[in-house]
Structures are given as structure tokens and as C-alpha cells.
Length: 135
Image (cartoon, rainbow, N blue to C red; front, side, top):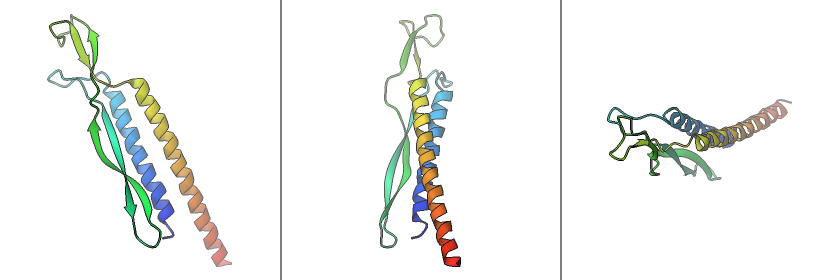
């Protein structure tokens, strides 16, 4: 029971790390196509809360439920000289918007920092409680 606050903050930091990893992967592949000429599809992490009923006080933790593909349409670019162009001269590009990915990374970083601050505060409270018990 005494470490539950630390576990909740830790689960928040872990999912924010996954969020940053997925956004970074999307940014890295923002101009990629596979060997068949199919553009990269943006990935989106889906989170879920998990109720933990150990002890007297139920707590929620967060975890990554799945990482799914974004169904939004691919970007089209008119480039008739490109070998991947269709009959009308358009090339399909990944559905990754670099600006949206950067905003997602910044938001995940702020959430990570907030969880880290909560973790350090809880740790400090525990250490102060131990010092009081020693005296």
C-alpha cells in the first residue's frame, strides 16, 4: 500500500515512453515506402486504465492496450516522373504529419515530467516518514 503512488507514477512514465517511441518511429518513416511501394502507415498507441484492487484503496494504473495503424488517408503528391506514380501521376506518401508528431512528442514529454515530479514527491515523503520513525 505504501508504494502504490510510486507504481502509479511509474506506469504513467512507461506509457509516455511508448508514446514518444511511436511518435519518433512515425517521424523517422514520414517519407518511407516498403519494398512493394506501399507507403508507411502512421502508428497510434492506445492506452487503457487498469483497476488494481489490492488492499483497501483501489487504484488505477495505465498500460498500453495496443498499437494500431491510423486509418487516415495517405498524402498524395503529383510527381509523374516517379516510378511509384499511378496512371494519373500521383504518388502516395505516408499519412504522417511531422507537426502533429512533434506536438505529440512534446505532450508526452510534459506528461512524463509530471509523472516524474509526482514520483519524486512521493519518494521524498516516504524518506521523510522513515526519518521521523528513526528519531
